[in-house]
Length: 626
Image (cartoon, rainbow, N blue to C red; front, side, top):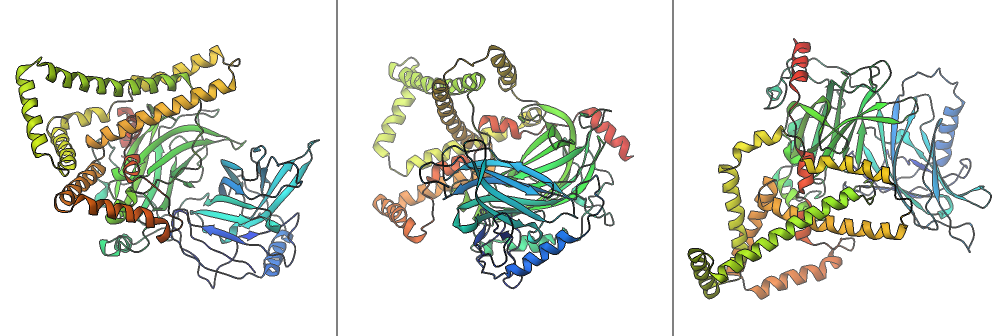
């Protein structure tokens, strides 16, 4: 008997109970007839759909055995599909001996492809957070073999647990969150798995749409229309109907739909011998990762691939990265862009200038995308005041003198602002400027005599309105200029400083000192980032969030004016005390910090800034289109 509980990470449809089959097949060495195991496919960002299905293990074993007896076909030089895996963590692993804890690592096998994870010392609940890809052909068995192992004295490997995942029943171009029990209840593994086809969508008759008009800073798209497969063609009106306001209370986690058409690129960097590259494109939305096919020996690839994502936070950022494929399966970086979902204009097709790996300065080449985005506003508002989903493959922080220097500068700017404010107040007390001190004294008297609690959020709302007025009147003409500039010099100096660090060498540093420095570095980064987020919210760097903040402040002002404070505190306390009773799996959170976590810091604003494509590339594209 097999049990199954599932939904797809990025919004794929959940199988019907009658059609459900189990991708997990527990094994130890070989699959045994009649073996049974339990697994779960969970929707980390998806709905909470639950279903049970039964599977005849003998039939699955016979099906896999039949495939293994088929004669091998002549392999093509081009991969047919790629399996992207994110190994998150293991839980409740069983040691082979009672006296010592294992150093677990995981081995994966897909056909001739293999991968070995890092070893985590002395733990039964390891957290790997590793991402890798396995390539395969259609003539290979679509099963992913997984084994958790420990290395004993002498180098001999001991299997702690194992399982097999049947990839054939997983929907392609979708990221699946999976939690599978190892055989004999030897523990649980948590994974993200995505199966991507390495072929482009079949072409359809071309037609022009009004959305093809170029926006400022983009190159005209001429008669180029994306090719979309019948499978990926979606009735947009039907999708929009699913996110209407009247359906706001259905599946609160699913709040939006994103479609990305990766069309082509131009002027990419040549990294292979012969002045060519083998480019492919990777799309990442939080923990969902999809990939196009590789176009070999080309600097102007045309992928014509369409992807769809289910959006669970409209403040997420779509990262599009172009890599060069190598025979040893290592990837060379070619360029990257980061697009906040709130900046997307639905149905707009345009060229984007690629940036470097840090998203700080201009890279080489441009990429053409067509994006479409639909979301439910009420669900988005609710989600904004809840914790953000962590990204599993985020790089671990490391101590760098350059980063420490930059964080010191950021904190110093904040401290300087506080000092300047203190000097201003002191000058009012000292009557350095009599008119200013007189006005400040009068305002102080009026505020103290008339101060009410509701005036505090009202004052913050006034600051929002003042900054909005300044933004529209004074700074409007600066937007075009800023869009064409690269990052500030402060960020560009990091790479040079890091090279200087390597030349000096820090081998003699004690690890404990480095850990302390890292902790100080990250603490300063958190303080500076929080202050920058608050400043950017007040100065309307993200209009949607600033509008939401202004609306909330107005609502709070009205409540404090009409409702006694004790009743507001009572409602807040009842909600906090009963939250776990109403929802046992709820995560305790701070709504204000969750709101600020959606506001980009100064560094993120630089990373999200769009750069205008170079004039030479624009001219070359126009010439090719003509």
